Image 1 (cartoon, rainbow, N blue to C red):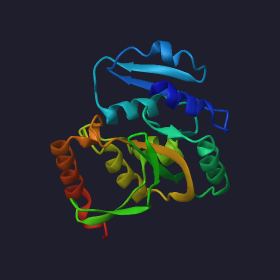
Image 2 (cartoon, one colour):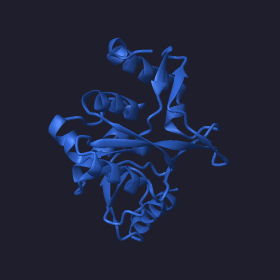
Image 3 (tube, rainbow, N blue to C red):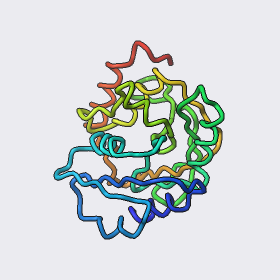
Length: 212
């Protein structure tokens, strides 16, 4: 999947970019990353989790903006330019996100609604996927809004809640990313016990401030 994700970065219409591939204690991918001149590899000696991997990427980034791409997801060619063009015009806004397609079992695409009802948390939640978010790197550094390394699941949701509470975020109604979802297993988010525990943690942290 990694070559496919990197290929989607290479096809971006915004050319001045870098891709930081964080190998979180996995198999050697240096040979793959080396095929893409815009990419550089940072490796963890052991598996530290998604939150730590994302933090590593942010810490090593050199650009003005940060965007996120897991290796099983895809950016459509216009994604980065659509977001950064808006951010360069709306100077009072330092973050934007687009709509997404959900790629179910890599068979068919479903447009993702902006909100959905979560039966476990018993409330409506925004479906802002981290793959669609672009923001200024300085926000994380200046406001100390990093991914929580204690969370092994839903670290992106926890980050998004904290991020959007302290920063205005522009919603762009354009489907520019493809988020992969597998119903037959194989994704971290499908570990039921850990997922429920993560949802409970988020519910306890933010319940009072989230409206249905």
